[in-house]
Image (cartoon, rainbow, N blue to C red; front, top):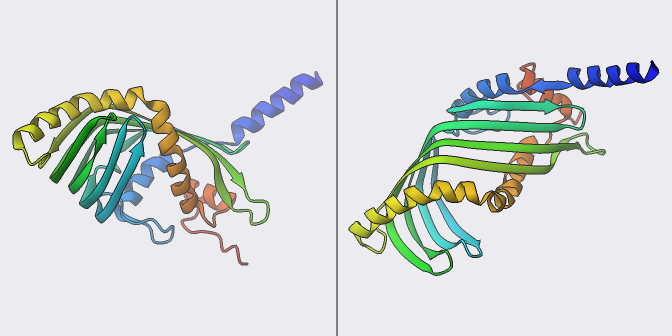
Length: 240
């Protein structure tokens, strides 16, 4: 009988200490569109980046370096929360978001190698439409015993892409070749994304972890719960 009561108590505690994040994720879409100075979140949809230097190397897959200017992304906030669970016992988060469509564009000047032997170079424009992009994440949070602040200890991110419409100009300074390769890239990239999940996860997971840790900086567990439940839109002043 005692064992039954213990099991029942554990089940009740586990159930009561799980938070459904879907409502928060729905509301957070607006935050991505307007930004939130209290939380230190800039406007991310539409997203604009004036300039960034690119230097990517993945052995056997791609080696690329160069410049991107006027980078734009539209639709980052237009996701559907498929799953959003935050379990307080163990501080585990499981998310799954679906973007039915996201548009990207940029000016570029790049050179590199694809697949280990296909060299490329070009200066021109890139436009892309991602369709049915699903991103899932599993996060393990921890509390710093000294400051009581949260941080991401472990993260695992996966992405699946159903379709890509891709256009590029200026490859090899050849319009016809650019057109042909645009179609090839549109056709093969979704399969590559879906087939190389381990490589994508190994690359994306630490990046996502770093981004989230920057966002969590200075937040306690109470702060995070208040933000999720809508009871507070600002951080606790830990100096008090």
